[in-house]
View 1 (cartoon, rainbow, N blue to C red):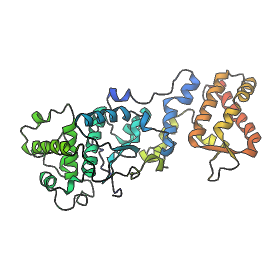
View 2: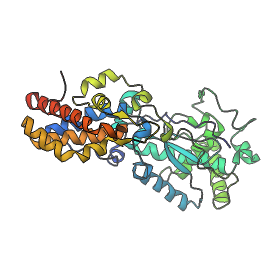
View 3: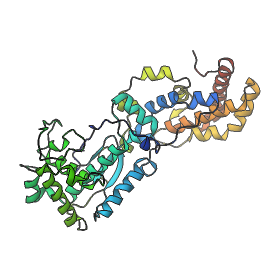
View 4: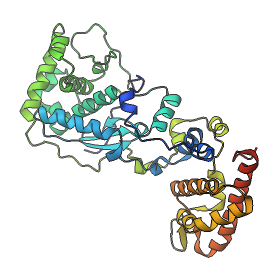
Amino acid sequence: MAAKSTRMRHRLAATCSQSFTTRLLPRARRVRKTRTLLFGESTRRLELLVTPIQRLGLQLETSPFAPLIADLYGELERAGIDLRPTFYLSTEYGCVEGTANIGLGFWDCDPDLHELNTELRAFSYSEKDIRALLRHEFGHAFCYSYKLYREAEFRRVFNVVGSFFDSYPADDRYTPNPWSKAFVNPCGDHYAQKHPDEDFAETVSVWLDPESNWRKTYQHKPGALRKLEYVGRVLARSGHAAVKQKNDPASLHIPLEQVNATVGDFLRAPMGRYRKRAPAFLDPDLKVLFRSRPAKKNGVCAAPEFVEANRRLLIDRITQWTGVADVVVIDLLDKVSERARMLDLVLRRQERDRKLVDLSAYLTTMATRYKLKETFASA
């Protein structure tokens, strides 16, 4: 089935737990003052905000999600369930309708992205939240893969009326009954009452959670307990069975490689505020020195390769002319290479000599500015 929408779960707003943040990618080392200016938090945050999402270089396999997905697979194996969804990084959390493809929010792949999201969108997910999300979205994937929504017992237990997919609330709003005993409510927000699709997914999440103790927790809620027992039966019945809906791993909803918007655009960041905080933001200068990669790549060379090919020459000459320590020029070159690579900047081969002069002049100006004022900012 073609992808229609994803089931969003932006309702969990707990502060990210320490156990999750310690698994995030390490921050750049901050030793010398030049590196503090060039690679410090304020500069890095602005660079992240102006970077197209598709060029962030985030990888699911090396992200904080990887061990949590592995733990989910362990829970599925212990429960005798063969289905393994396709996880991918996206601009939202959710399972693509009718598939076993699950998108995960890219902002939880990096500590600065995580903090920017918390600061600008006022929510963050803890490790516990992420685990619950993975179980919940797996519930959707299992339902779609085995087409449970077509079965009479499923429709009766979860009170499906009419079309399963088309009856989902278009505006994502729902009015729950907080006193109902017919639904699980692991997060206290009555999300299971939104739609039978969410009811099943929430029930699966509770059933899979090894710490839920669901029989005791829901012993006085007969409707919820009946659904949990049904989930146990259907997972046992279909756990090793062949799926009824073969998954197409290419049926994704907004994978990162398709997103050319910047992080700042996505988070609706007030860019002026972040520009004032960044003392060594070189991107505007580098875009003047070099150019964006054209559609036709003939006759151009990558700016980072050009910088690295002339690194030794630039260090020797600029330290000689300015009298700064070589580490100042080294740190500048590291930053120029890093940002030129992230921005995918190039130069024409026939202008390499002129660009070497331009780059030398620029780095000399920056090194002199640092020598006189201990800053790279122009004002």
